[in-house]
Image 1 (tube, helix red, strand yellow):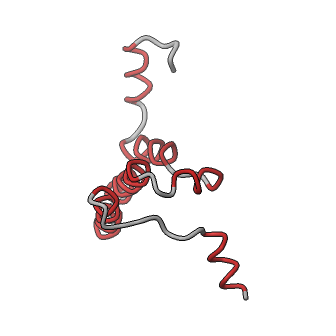
Image 2 (image 1 turned 60 degrees about the horizontal axis):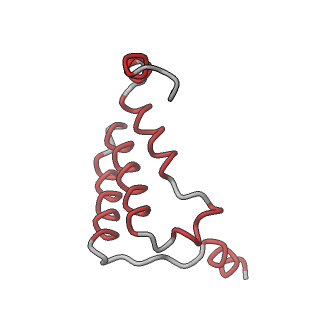
Length: 96
């Protein structure tokens, strides 16, 4: 897409629905398993992930779930939330 002119980029983007654009952004900003330890305490990365998830839920007409994710984003930004424990460690605890 970087080789396209601005008008070509706008045309490509215009062909996508709001939901498709939000899902693409959400996928891009999602914290991958391989990056979890590195980004678990990164408030900005966590908030971005939650905000884009909220947007996807809102566009899917699920405002209550959108609100859950927005509140999570606020928690990351106002420092009322902290990094959860490692998901792999939690799974191992549950299996015992």
